[in-house]
Length: 273
Image (tube, rainbow, N blue to C red; front, side, top):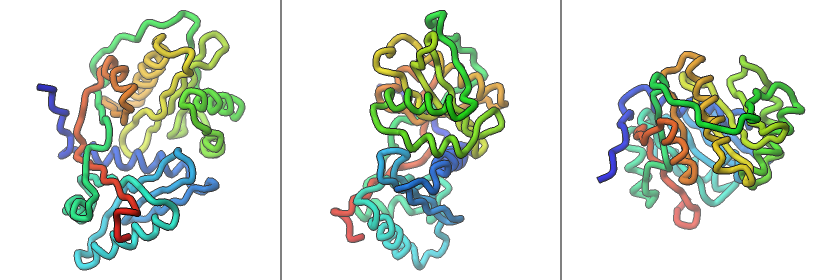
């Protein structure tokens, strides 16, 4: 029988995860093709491109008599831009029965991918890697342009607009979004982002160029960023993982975790909205 995920749903972690994900999405506000709704009672983002994504990340509706109408109105707004969206319901969202209400509309809920967590106070050896490998923090627009180009190749999708978002955000250790490139000699081979926001720090968008995979470069970059998170005073961290990368994260001490959030997928064709 597989191990059950570590249950952190009744801790402060779900609220931190939610705040961190919102902070990540806020970096892309105002870019062409990106529409964002960001208020005290709800947060959602839609974009014409695959990245940064289409997702509802917060709903805090307190008027019990208007919940169904608010659901209808929100989906009608989103339906002006696209036909499907993922709706993440966190433990702190309101009403408390929001997930059940969405399920009654045919929007079945699930864990929403691979959520992983690790204790940074436990020692993990750095993965072995070629001696010519080094890691650099992105410090200016020229380095960011190179980072975007390498990340584009790593993910196999057009991410040129990401440059505008990250360059606008700024660089250096005082920024809450930090970007790193791993070089083999002078060749950028792996990239990733560390986001310190919402009371936690996590890692996004780790990619390795196809010709340099399975050589430990992505693992080495991950281990380095985990140490940066630890040096910033955090005792743990989490990540939202693809199926392909999950085993790499597990080799670095990550375990399956349940933050209590559930993903509900809405499709316009199957909805009255």
